[in-house]
Image (cartoon, rainbow, N blue to C red):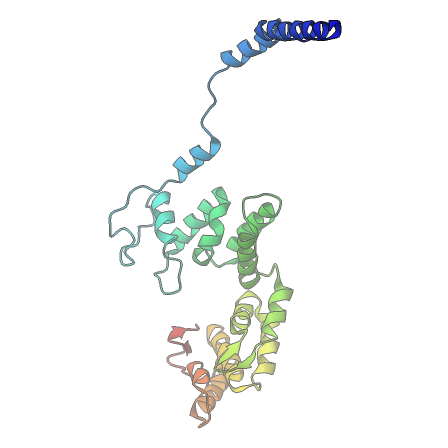
Length: 272
Protein backbone atom coordinates (compact mmCIF):
# COMPACT_ATOMS: atom_id res chain seq x y z
CA UNK A 1 0.00 0.00 0.00
CA UNK A 2 2.77 2.45 0.96
CA UNK A 3 4.69 1.58 -2.18
CA UNK A 4 1.64 2.38 -4.35
CA UNK A 5 1.14 5.73 -2.63
CA UNK A 6 4.82 6.59 -3.05
CA UNK A 7 4.75 5.63 -6.78
CA UNK A 8 1.66 7.76 -7.37
CA UNK A 9 3.24 10.79 -5.66
CA UNK A 10 6.40 10.34 -7.77
CA UNK A 11 4.48 10.27 -11.06
CA UNK A 12 2.42 13.31 -10.07
CA UNK A 13 5.54 15.28 -9.13
CA UNK A 14 7.26 14.43 -12.41
CA UNK A 15 4.19 15.56 -14.38
CA UNK A 16 4.09 18.90 -12.54
CA UNK A 17 7.78 19.52 -13.22
CA UNK A 18 7.34 18.74 -16.94
CA UNK A 19 4.35 21.08 -17.27
CA UNK A 20 6.24 23.87 -15.52
CA UNK A 21 9.18 23.43 -17.87
CA UNK A 22 6.93 23.71 -20.91
CA UNK A 23 5.42 26.98 -19.66
CA UNK A 24 8.80 28.68 -19.17
CA UNK A 25 9.79 31.30 -21.79
CA UNK A 26 12.63 30.43 -24.21
CA UNK A 27 16.13 31.21 -22.95
CA UNK A 28 17.62 34.63 -23.76
CA UNK A 29 19.93 33.25 -26.45
CA UNK A 30 17.00 31.74 -28.37
CA UNK A 31 14.99 34.97 -28.10
CA UNK A 32 17.98 36.89 -29.50
CA UNK A 33 18.25 34.61 -32.50
CA UNK A 34 14.56 34.96 -33.25
CA UNK A 35 14.86 38.75 -33.13
CA UNK A 36 17.76 38.62 -35.61
CA UNK A 37 15.75 36.52 -38.06
CA UNK A 38 12.75 38.83 -37.82
CA UNK A 39 14.92 41.89 -38.41
CA UNK A 40 16.33 40.58 -41.71
CA UNK A 41 15.06 42.20 -44.93
CA UNK A 42 12.77 40.25 -47.23
CA UNK A 43 14.61 37.91 -49.66
CA UNK A 44 15.27 39.23 -53.18
CA UNK A 45 13.39 37.62 -56.12
CA UNK A 46 14.85 34.33 -57.31
CA UNK A 47 17.51 34.51 -60.00
CA UNK A 48 15.47 32.03 -62.03
CA UNK A 49 12.51 34.39 -61.99
CA UNK A 50 14.69 37.23 -63.27
CA UNK A 51 16.06 35.03 -66.06
CA UNK A 52 12.56 34.00 -67.07
CA UNK A 53 11.46 37.62 -67.28
CA UNK A 54 14.55 38.56 -69.28
CA UNK A 55 14.02 35.74 -71.77
CA UNK A 56 10.27 36.23 -72.07
CA UNK A 57 9.34 36.85 -75.70
CA UNK A 58 7.35 39.99 -76.47
CA UNK A 59 3.98 39.51 -78.14
CA UNK A 60 4.33 39.22 -81.91
CA UNK A 61 1.84 40.04 -84.68
CA UNK A 62 0.61 37.04 -86.66
CA UNK A 63 2.86 37.75 -89.64
CA UNK A 64 6.06 38.34 -87.66
CA UNK A 65 7.44 34.90 -88.56
CA UNK A 66 6.44 35.13 -92.22
CA UNK A 67 9.36 33.74 -94.25
CA UNK A 68 8.86 36.51 -96.80
CA UNK A 69 9.33 39.22 -94.16
CA UNK A 70 12.80 38.75 -92.74
CA UNK A 71 13.83 41.40 -90.20
CA UNK A 72 16.34 44.01 -91.44
CA UNK A 73 19.98 43.72 -90.42
CA UNK A 74 19.64 46.58 -87.93
CA UNK A 75 16.51 45.21 -86.23
CA UNK A 76 16.65 44.82 -82.42
CA UNK A 77 18.65 41.73 -81.56
CA UNK A 78 15.63 40.28 -79.74
CA UNK A 79 13.71 40.40 -83.02
CA UNK A 80 16.52 38.75 -84.95
CA UNK A 81 16.90 35.96 -82.40
CA UNK A 82 13.18 35.35 -82.11
CA UNK A 83 12.70 35.25 -85.88
CA UNK A 84 15.74 33.23 -86.93
CA UNK A 85 15.41 30.63 -84.20
CA UNK A 86 12.18 29.71 -86.00
CA UNK A 87 13.85 29.65 -89.43
CA UNK A 88 16.88 27.40 -89.05
CA UNK A 89 15.80 24.74 -91.55
CA UNK A 90 17.44 24.27 -95.00
CA UNK A 91 14.18 25.19 -96.75
CA UNK A 92 13.90 28.51 -94.87
CA UNK A 93 15.29 31.83 -96.11
CA UNK A 94 18.92 32.55 -95.31
CA UNK A 95 20.09 35.51 -93.21
CA UNK A 96 22.40 38.13 -94.65
CA UNK A 97 26.10 38.24 -93.82
CA UNK A 98 25.51 41.12 -91.39
CA UNK A 99 22.70 39.27 -89.62
CA UNK A 100 24.83 36.12 -89.33
CA UNK A 101 27.49 38.17 -87.59
CA UNK A 102 24.97 39.62 -85.15
CA UNK A 103 23.60 36.16 -84.36
CA UNK A 104 27.11 34.93 -83.60
CA UNK A 105 27.74 37.91 -81.33
CA UNK A 106 24.48 37.15 -79.53
CA UNK A 107 25.63 33.57 -78.96
CA UNK A 108 28.80 34.88 -77.34
CA UNK A 109 26.63 36.70 -74.82
CA UNK A 110 24.21 33.79 -74.39
CA UNK A 111 26.04 30.55 -75.27
CA UNK A 112 22.94 28.46 -74.59
CA UNK A 113 21.51 29.78 -77.88
CA UNK A 114 24.44 28.45 -79.89
CA UNK A 115 23.10 24.95 -80.74
CA UNK A 116 19.87 26.41 -82.13
CA UNK A 117 21.65 28.94 -84.35
CA UNK A 118 24.60 26.93 -85.68
CA UNK A 119 23.17 26.59 -89.18
CA UNK A 120 22.78 30.37 -89.42
CA UNK A 121 26.29 31.42 -88.37
CA UNK A 122 29.02 32.68 -90.72
CA UNK A 123 30.92 29.77 -92.23
CA UNK A 124 34.47 31.06 -92.27
CA UNK A 125 37.59 30.44 -90.22
CA UNK A 126 37.10 33.54 -88.07
CA UNK A 127 33.62 32.42 -87.05
CA UNK A 128 34.87 28.88 -86.42
CA UNK A 129 37.52 30.24 -84.08
CA UNK A 130 34.89 32.11 -82.06
CA UNK A 131 32.63 29.04 -81.92
CA UNK A 132 35.57 26.89 -80.79
CA UNK A 133 36.22 29.32 -77.94
CA UNK A 134 32.58 29.05 -76.85
CA UNK A 135 32.82 25.26 -77.08
CA UNK A 136 35.97 25.13 -74.93
CA UNK A 137 34.37 27.39 -72.31
CA UNK A 138 31.21 25.26 -72.28
CA UNK A 139 33.25 22.14 -71.52
CA UNK A 140 34.10 23.55 -68.09
CA UNK A 141 30.71 25.08 -67.34
CA UNK A 142 27.05 24.10 -67.35
CA UNK A 143 25.99 26.49 -70.12
CA UNK A 144 25.43 23.62 -72.57
CA UNK A 145 24.15 20.12 -71.93
CA UNK A 146 25.59 17.00 -73.55
CA UNK A 147 23.32 17.30 -76.58
CA UNK A 148 24.30 20.92 -77.09
CA UNK A 149 28.00 20.16 -76.79
CA UNK A 150 27.69 17.38 -79.37
CA UNK A 151 25.89 19.71 -81.80
CA UNK A 152 28.63 22.34 -81.51
CA UNK A 153 31.39 19.76 -81.89
CA UNK A 154 29.72 18.33 -85.00
CA UNK A 155 29.47 21.82 -86.47
CA UNK A 156 33.16 22.45 -85.82
CA UNK A 157 34.07 19.12 -87.40
CA UNK A 158 32.32 20.05 -90.65
CA UNK A 159 33.24 23.76 -90.74
CA UNK A 160 36.81 24.01 -89.46
CA UNK A 161 40.15 22.24 -89.17
CA UNK A 162 39.84 21.72 -85.42
CA UNK A 163 38.75 18.10 -85.87
CA UNK A 164 40.22 17.54 -89.33
CA UNK A 165 41.31 13.98 -88.56
CA UNK A 166 37.74 13.00 -87.70
CA UNK A 167 36.35 14.69 -90.84
CA UNK A 168 38.94 12.99 -93.06
CA UNK A 169 38.10 9.61 -91.54
CA UNK A 170 34.42 10.14 -92.38
CA UNK A 171 35.16 11.41 -95.88
CA UNK A 172 37.24 8.32 -96.64
CA UNK A 173 34.16 6.21 -95.95
CA UNK A 174 32.16 7.86 -98.73
CA UNK A 175 30.71 5.16 -100.98
CA UNK A 176 27.64 4.18 -102.94
CA UNK A 177 24.81 2.97 -100.74
CA UNK A 178 21.35 2.21 -102.11
CA UNK A 179 20.31 5.39 -103.95
CA UNK A 180 22.77 7.84 -102.37
CA UNK A 181 26.41 8.40 -101.39
CA UNK A 182 27.05 7.47 -97.80
CA UNK A 183 29.08 10.15 -95.95
CA UNK A 184 28.53 12.54 -98.85
CA UNK A 185 28.26 15.51 -96.47
CA UNK A 186 31.67 14.77 -94.94
CA UNK A 187 33.33 14.53 -98.35
CA UNK A 188 31.83 17.84 -99.49
CA UNK A 189 32.76 19.51 -96.20
CA UNK A 190 36.37 18.36 -96.52
CA UNK A 191 36.71 20.12 -99.88
CA UNK A 192 35.72 23.40 -98.24
CA UNK A 193 37.77 22.96 -95.06
CA UNK A 194 41.04 21.67 -96.56
CA UNK A 195 41.25 21.31 -100.34
CA UNK A 196 44.85 20.05 -100.30
CA UNK A 197 43.74 17.11 -98.17
CA UNK A 198 40.57 16.52 -100.16
CA UNK A 199 42.00 16.59 -103.70
CA UNK A 200 43.97 13.28 -103.67
CA UNK A 201 41.02 11.57 -102.03
CA UNK A 202 38.69 12.85 -104.76
CA UNK A 203 41.10 11.70 -107.45
CA UNK A 204 41.03 8.18 -106.03
CA UNK A 205 37.25 8.23 -105.74
CA UNK A 206 36.71 9.38 -109.32
CA UNK A 207 36.93 5.73 -110.32
CA UNK A 208 34.87 4.38 -107.42
CA UNK A 209 31.18 3.47 -107.39
CA UNK A 210 29.02 5.26 -109.95
CA UNK A 211 27.42 7.78 -107.60
CA UNK A 212 30.61 8.35 -105.61
CA UNK A 213 32.64 8.81 -108.80
CA UNK A 214 30.11 11.35 -110.09
CA UNK A 215 30.24 13.30 -106.83
CA UNK A 216 34.05 13.26 -106.68
CA UNK A 217 34.33 14.40 -110.31
CA UNK A 218 31.75 17.14 -109.74
CA UNK A 219 33.71 18.45 -106.75
CA UNK A 220 36.95 18.40 -108.74
CA UNK A 221 35.20 20.28 -111.54
CA UNK A 222 33.78 22.85 -109.16
CA UNK A 223 37.21 23.62 -107.74
CA UNK A 224 38.80 23.84 -111.19
CA UNK A 225 36.20 26.35 -112.33
CA UNK A 226 36.56 28.42 -109.13
CA UNK A 227 40.37 28.39 -109.46
CA UNK A 228 40.11 29.17 -113.20
CA UNK A 229 42.06 26.05 -114.10
CA UNK A 230 40.58 25.80 -117.58
CA UNK A 231 42.40 22.66 -118.70
CA UNK A 232 41.36 20.66 -115.64
CA UNK A 233 37.84 22.06 -115.79
CA UNK A 234 37.49 20.85 -119.38
CA UNK A 235 38.72 17.38 -118.43
CA UNK A 236 36.32 17.02 -115.52
CA UNK A 237 33.46 18.46 -117.53
CA UNK A 238 33.96 15.82 -120.18
CA UNK A 239 34.00 13.10 -117.53
CA UNK A 240 30.69 14.36 -116.19
CA UNK A 241 29.18 14.32 -119.66
CA UNK A 242 30.37 10.75 -120.12
CA UNK A 243 28.80 9.67 -116.84
CA UNK A 244 25.54 11.47 -117.66
CA UNK A 245 25.37 9.86 -121.10
CA UNK A 246 25.87 6.37 -119.72
CA UNK A 247 22.79 4.20 -120.11
CA UNK A 248 23.33 2.69 -116.71
CA UNK A 249 23.84 5.99 -114.91
CA UNK A 250 21.96 5.92 -111.63
CA UNK A 251 19.52 8.70 -110.92
CA UNK A 252 21.49 10.06 -107.98
CA UNK A 253 24.67 10.20 -110.06
CA UNK A 254 22.83 12.23 -112.68
CA UNK A 255 22.28 15.01 -110.17
CA UNK A 256 26.01 15.57 -110.03
CA UNK A 257 26.41 15.57 -113.78
CA UNK A 258 24.58 18.67 -114.91
CA UNK A 259 27.30 21.18 -115.81
CA UNK A 260 25.67 24.36 -117.02
CA UNK A 261 27.39 27.72 -117.38
CA UNK A 262 30.20 26.63 -115.10
CA UNK A 263 27.90 25.17 -112.44
CA UNK A 264 27.10 21.68 -111.26
CA UNK A 265 23.82 21.12 -109.55
CA UNK A 266 22.90 18.65 -106.86
CA UNK A 267 19.16 18.35 -106.31
CA UNK A 268 18.88 21.78 -107.98
CA UNK A 269 21.26 23.31 -105.45
CA UNK A 270 24.42 24.82 -107.02
CA UNK A 271 27.63 23.19 -105.82
CA UNK A 272 29.54 26.29 -106.84
